[in-house]
Amino acid sequence: MIKNIFFIFITLCLSILVKAENGDTLFYKGDYSVIIDSIVIEGNNQTEDFIILRELTILPGDTLNPVLAEYNRERVYSLNIFNEVKLYPFELNSINYLLITIEESWYIYPLPFVTLKNRDWDKISYGVAVKIANFRGRNETLRGRLALGYDPSLTFSYTNPNLSRNLDLFSIFEIGLLDVNNKSEVAKELAGEDFEHKFYFAKVTFGKRFGLFHRFAVTAGYDYIETPFYIKGVSASNERIDRTVILGANYNYDTRDLRQYASNGLFAFASFELKGMGINDINYRIAYIDYREYRPIISSFILKWRLATRLTSGNVPYYDYSYLGLNQRIRGHWDEQQEGNDVFIGSLEMDYWILNDYRLNLYWIPLLPNSLLSYRVGLVWELFADTGTTRLIGEPLALNQFSTGYGTGVSILLLPYFTMRIEYAVNEQFKGQWIFDINASF
Image 1 (cartoon, rainbow, N blue to C red):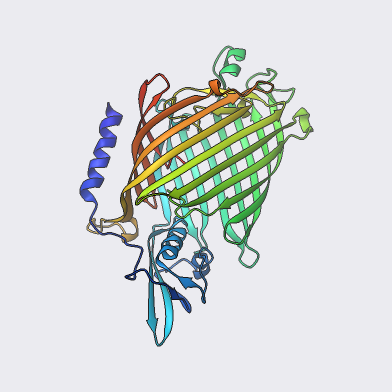
Image 2 (tube, rainbow, N blue to C red; image 1 turned 60 degrees about the vertical axis):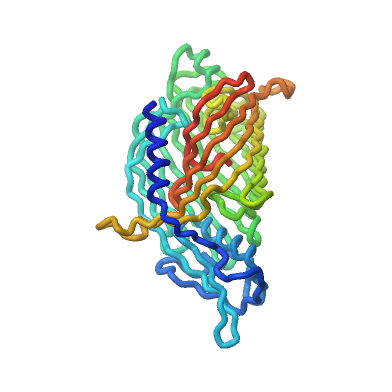
């Protein structure tokens, strides 16, 4: 009941506060095209020009039209470091300019947090997170996080999407110390009780962007996982402590317009990891594939669908099994947990934009900078169907094993900061449940 009242209250507050400032992305009237001779950027007090220019699909000499202007504006917005982005084509002295004006968001966030581990209200984690976005004006991100409560942890990461400007190289570095509660019901039965893993990890990724849409990366990492006892399968090695060397590679193809809540484009991701490679008697493999498509159909209606699978082979420990009911969930079976070597997921959703790109400016609030008081607000109605299942090695994949749910709901966007969803779903027996979650469904 408290959760219901809280989210209804938030929805009502947003409805009252939103000003009818339509952030129309077609900043010239009529359905005509113009050849752009030069591109000018204003408002980027910290952000370097090339961070914005490298996201554009248009160059001087190209023809700009309203559809292309909308798509490029959303690509710049997807950098997630701006409160507002506008495109103004204009002519001066017989030269056609494209003016891109941006409003930078607040970049330093030393904030307390309360999160739901695995989206479970009974698994609350809390602490302090520090984020420095757009570090040095190059869209680099530094993150530090101290979490207490469920699964206490201390983690740090550094992301540099522009390691080499000319070669389009990027890098990610991650390190962390965690106490992780066992998530496998099979491991719990074998141990006869709940238990925790002590988990220490370090991981580095180097990659290259090819053109606007393609990225390829290689990863190397090391995991130290300590269990209070040794049970075969609970540990990957023949000891209670697993020391795992990791090598992997991944490929990403992404043409989405607004990555925070896409309405157009494709997303495809594939990765493969070798874990252990026989070192310390650990040897197993994990592959992951995720494909999503987003298509406008009629007016403000968007049709989108997703297929994803995680496949494992070798002597996979229970802590690295594939799960439904944790990070990956089926609406209609939200609280039901399944585990196996492999997982298969499918989703189909139709969205309708009730509010799209409205501005919420709270500049009247004293003491706080304007960059913290300006937001892009959206409200989306959803109609969805989800299905999924897990499978152990050697088991057949049958349709009657899939858990399926259907439902409807709304998503509230307050960008560039967060997206929240309120949904109602039913399963095959028409048993219903309310779902409250953050971020887009996919």
